[in-house]
Length: 359
Image (cartoon, rainbow, N blue to C red):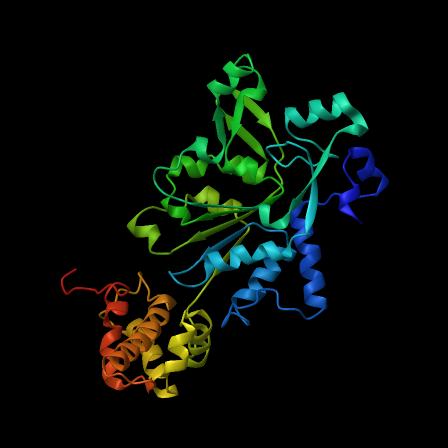
């Protein structure tokens, strides 16, 4: 189907385009990937027998997902990779703020446009990269940010009454209709804001000021949370947890080998550094062992966790320490010495929280 030639509702009908819900779309594309033995989450290491199968089962079940795990466990990264399970393009009513499906429009704007122009209503094509919304939950996030509010400026410009649906300024969730919407650090969201998500997850109702809207939004929700947040900063309210169908526990690498692969893949080593500084397998393993020892230590706060970012930053610092020494001594090539490992201390101090006696 050549989308360049499909510019109106009539063209879309002629092409016999069939609309799907986003969860069905993700399910169909995931089934294809599994059948073709393609990697569903490339670059995610150490989760092949644990987290990834859980995520695949949740997506096949058309579930909203909560990733629950300590920091640096690739929760957000996995959510972002779900874009690759979407169709390349989908049609929307041209000019729609909420990505209206031309066959089942939701907003008053799209309904009025189709009613006025009929089959001549203009169609736009939305790329999968534009169908992803993400919000970091902070205590100052409001219902207006997420759901929407009345826009007095729009009402004045269009000379509309506040009772007219067209004066609504939609929040980030309605604007993510027919897409993936991620809320990071969900417990940081105030309880009253979490409550505003109940109806959207269950029935698709939007509560905006005096309006009782019934917009069956088509959204794949992904939430991330850190277990420490349950006690330290906030909590996920129980009825909201009940409405999120699949809760998936993430974890740190189980073996040094997996941890080495992750560090190798994620570290940002400049080309000049790679040519000048060699790193032995022993040094790489010593750096990884720092994280493993910290995770097992009684002096390190278990609830806080020891992120994979620690070893990535430490590896980069070890190479830079050797490079600095080579520059000072006017050496063209060198390797990371054991004495260079003192240079990784700044990578550790900010990433490990200690448990103090008496606390």
